[in-house]
Length: 328
Ligand SMILES: O=P(O)(O)O[C@@H]1C[C@H](O)[C@@H](CO)O1
Ligand SMILES: Nc1nc2[nH]cnc2c(=O)[nH]1
Image 1 (tube, rainbow, N blue to C red):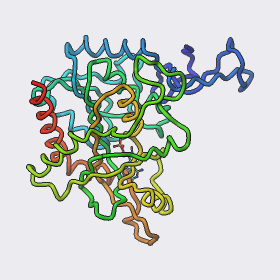
Image 2 (image 1 turned 90 degrees about the horizontal axis):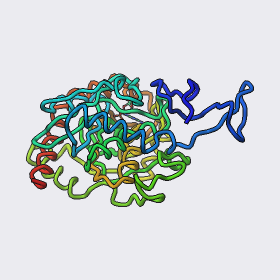
Image 3 (image 1 turned 90 degrees about the vertical axis):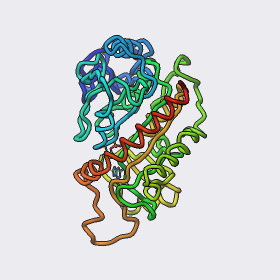
Image 4 (image 1 turned 180 degrees about the vertical axis):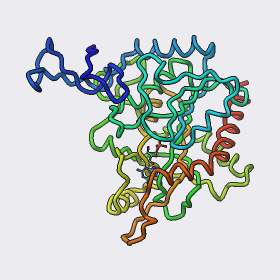
């Protein structure tokens, strides 16, 4: 594995997308240097993931059962963790860094409603310049730490006209636009220690957890703000055009974002149970107009997320409590 600077993503980690190795075999060349592309799945071999997981388990003294990925502006999901052990991403060996506002860049390990949990306060996005396997590498770290359940959250634009800003969409399926274009976090040789070469993705989103979340929404008195729907991940960082939003709607997409799908693929590949939701931070226009309101922006996304943090935290905490009680 090459450790030259040319392999660095934005985080400066020594595993990136493309390698220029003077000693390499058949390759193209750039400025006289040979270029050997590295398949995504080789960016983080099993042993490296194992080292990161050991670092976290030893450093925290815990084997978390539930992993949480906090979406944009939803970092407070990790603030409710009790007796937290905090790991700055920069201090975790071979970990990328967060470069997006609203993603603090810390891993928080502790307990929540009696369950051992680890939460990423800050995820990695494709548009930051990280390959998909790098974006979802922490999911494999979670797996080797002992995590059985992945809770993935995101901020998303609502395409379904019934959705209002501030609503929560429980994901029951996704449309993988990056996958349509031939990109996958599983691309390259498969390591069967993680999972099979050809994982099936029907039933990726755990139905029991969705049903429990609906019940919790009723108990919280927010049932009219809870929906079940289909999420799609685009590459970003730009928001969508009207024509793209129309096309997504025709495909049955209810909410659009720039994350989560590759994390879910990685989690299902290694047989984790998945629960995911989108906080609808903006309504996407699907008709042409001159309204400035139609233009999404990250400040609005963050501001809406802030106003809905409490409800999202309560939903997550109550669901984790149910999982914990059921397994006790
Ligand atoms: O990390 P998530 O998917 O919650 O963040 C969304 C997608 C972009 O990163 C950002 C755009 O406002 O919010
Ligand atoms: N792609 C995309 N991501 C978002 N994240 C929050 N809102 C949006 C949106 O409208 N589009």
